[in-house]
Image 1 (cartoon, rainbow, N blue to C red):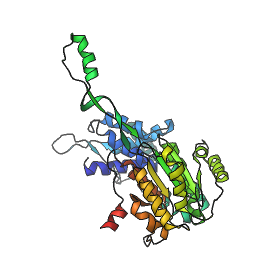
Image 2: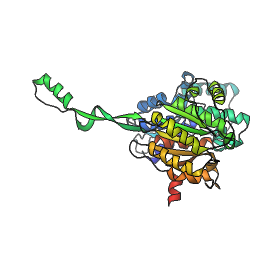
Image 3: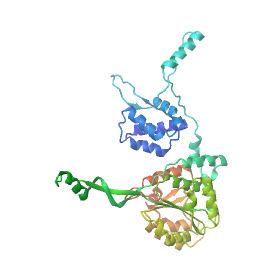
Amino acid sequence: MPSSLFHNLILFGRLLRGLGLDVNPGRMIDLVDALEHIDIGRRDDFYYAARSLLVHRHEDLPLFEQAFEMFWHKPVDEWGSVEWNLGVRRSRRKPLAASPAPRGAAERDQREASEDTPPLLEATRTYAAHEVLRQRDFADLTAEELESIKLLISRLVWRLGERRTRRHRHGQGHQLDLRRTLRRSLKRGGEVLEWAHREPRFKPRPLVVFADVSGSMERYTRLLLHFIYGLMRGLEQRVEVFLFGTRLTCVTREMRDRDVERALREVSRSVLDWSGGTRIGQAVKDFNFHWARRVLGGGAVVLLISDGWDRGDPDLLRQEMARLSRSCYRLIWLNPLLGSPDYEPLTRGMQAALPYIDDFLPVHNLASLEDLARQLSRIDRRQAPVSPWLRSQAS
């Protein structure tokens, strides 16, 4: 895709968000993917593709149509040819008249001009509070900002990579489907005139989430639980959730409640070691010996959320992290302290776990959650990308 077109799509999304439409990065990614299947030069194709992907409430249709009319125009160049383009229509000021017109004539001319020309939407650069909230650390938010962040977290779009199964289906693959080929040949007296093919079948990867609810994570626990709840509601595949401090607790059933506040209340009642100490190695060992065979099948991805402060045995943590890394497809450690530019993983827990982590990412603000969403969506079917932080440390 040309960079100019991509830039214009970003401006289009910002304009819609400024008007109050629920246009998040995930929906803009869907629109970019849809442009591969339509002709961008045809106005109706682009209009209906954008409207179906970006508008989800009937009352937002008039705003979308006005924004689209302002953004889409076709300027005529000096040779008379029509060139399709996406851009912002800039309003032109009318020249001042030499003498003022009578009041009645001015009102009549203004009314006639408004009837002849379609209404234009004036777009100005305004202060967007949520842009500032994206960069604010979760630990520094006020009570009012916390409610706004919870709403923004619930609107995040989550996708997780797929895995290739051993099964096949009818498609355009390279492998011949002999059974279907012979069945088709019966219509022609047993003569094979066309070959049927098969392609691999793919399934979404399961997700397992470990969240540290010890005392050192108390500033982030509440919002991170909202983030985990949004993961469970946003993903189609199975998601298992475990909380740990000094012991491991499975809270998958409690987190499936349709009401987020009721779900979090049930979780707080189920976890007995809330805001206590931390024994990451013992918690991972309990999972490896009691839960791994049940929930890590199908190439699962594991998210471990902790600041790395551990009171347990670092050798036990090192041994169990190695076992967990061998059992899952991708092991991602999310650390809220990693958002600080001065942070270094010097704690015993992080030093023991780092050699077995595939991705080491921050999770301290809304922007880091958006980066995590993009990272999860890029986990492909064969080989997952390496964390930029770990790549820089290795070099």
